[in-house]
Image (tube, rainbow, N blue to C red; front, top):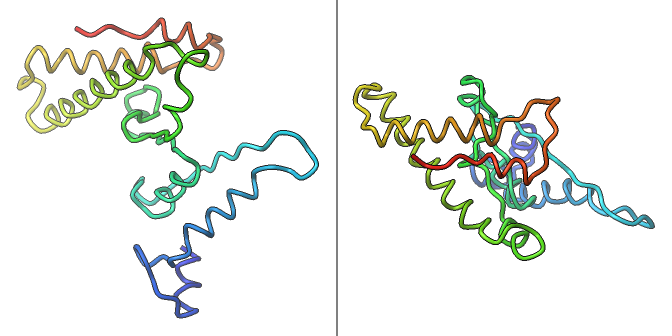
Length: 179
């Protein structure tokens, strides 16, 4: 917000939502500072945490940050209110997921399973919106199954207590089947 004010005071031409056109390069230069350290091996990983008014991920700052960092993890107030792990898998993204999958890295069917899971979660989100509008009584057995599957993913696969230690393979073995 301060950048918008300073940019306006300088008389710079506004771009999307009145932010200056150089917002992307400004953010990129901030995040690139977190990269390599001269004379030392390895790198530092930055995890920018952004909270936006009304959780608007289409706002220029989180939108551009997702491009710079090659992905973003979106937390959901609605999921948190339901008492489940708040990571919103449908709104989160990774542009590098495909490069990290394959022989010697992940299970062979990982990308197919991820696509099927996202499809099922998308269907469950549509059903949840329908239930909010028309009520639970309007749902078909298949619709209820979608909601049960979503809950099983949230509680059985994604949710993990702080004191619970399990490997990625153990987590994947907990993946629920479909109805």
